[in-house]
Picture 1 (cartoon, rainbow, N blue to C red):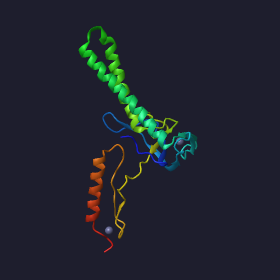
Picture 2: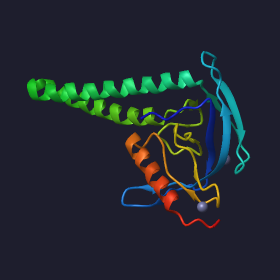
Picture 3: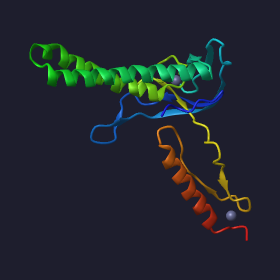
Picture 4: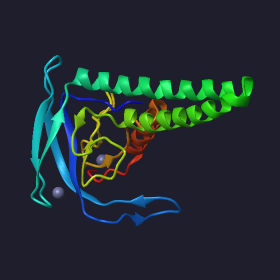
Length: 202
Ligand SMILES: [Zn+2]
Ligand SMILES: [Zn+2]
């Protein structure tokens, strides 16, 4: 699922604090980022992308990003998806070709399958991360010195789960990385926990 895009876009701008990634599992490293929330107002649909400047609190560096309108961001997401699907189609066609044609054609078909798979995988990742804010490596699958992370807005119809009497709150997670059914179930579970909480205001 592509990221949910807002006109008043909430983001977290952060500075990477470690130079070398820390190992956090058999084949994963993690990077510590320190940052804070900003709200960027996107240009109107049909208007050109506009710059957004920010001064990093950690290293005092001034950085400039390019902010695209909501419509332009959706077009960018769609374009990356189209490229990813093309890569996948090349992969499938070349694998089929290897089986059907074989022989001398393998010299071409095998590299084509690898390029197709790599394109589908790599560009598919970019498609999922496209947020219409570019520059300084934002949204690209690299470990940049500064990061921009989009904060997705609360899904429609799922209000904050807070007890009006005692302020008790139940959290649930949402985001385009989760399937809609999963978010809905987590919301319902959180709502059930709120209904069952021991109210301190009695
Ligand atoms: Zn910095
Ligand atoms: Zn309560």
